[in-house]
Image 1 (cartoon, rainbow, N blue to C red):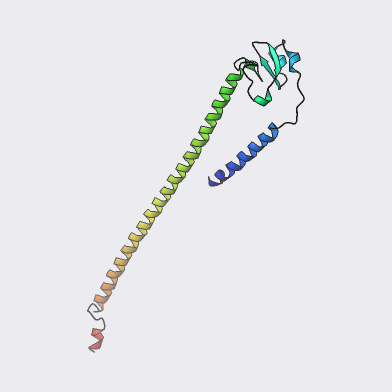
Image 2 (tube, rainbow, N blue to C red):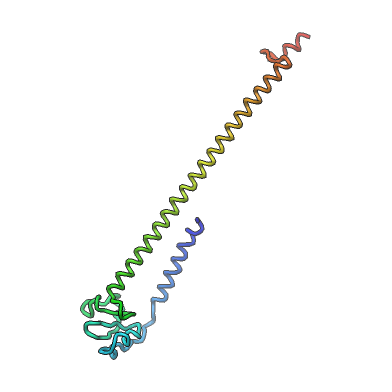
Length: 171
């Protein structure tokens, strides 16, 4: 899981740099979209650089510098680009909703992974503490057993007095 977290930023950087490279074009040849005006939407949109305005029935060059076509050129809900049945406004709304859902999903995944990882480490710590407590308990039991055994041996050989060597001194 930790390796995946390290890998994700690199992938994002590569994807973003590739999109930036492909987005930069070197002075494309001007498409002659105006000649396709008063024809059909399908004929206009065969060329990717053209924009079809439904109300005026005009085919125009897509205004690349403004990103979105200005309202004076063609209203967004009447502009068609790429597909004739999708208006530009719906396309923008759908793309932003999809992007928002993806971003929220990524944030939720990151939050859950971090939280689950912390829960896992807390469980591991609790398990280790339980094992340490069991070991200490067994060690204490062994100590008391050893003390009892030593006391029995001392009693057996008569060494239970204050001075264990007093019995040998009397001989």
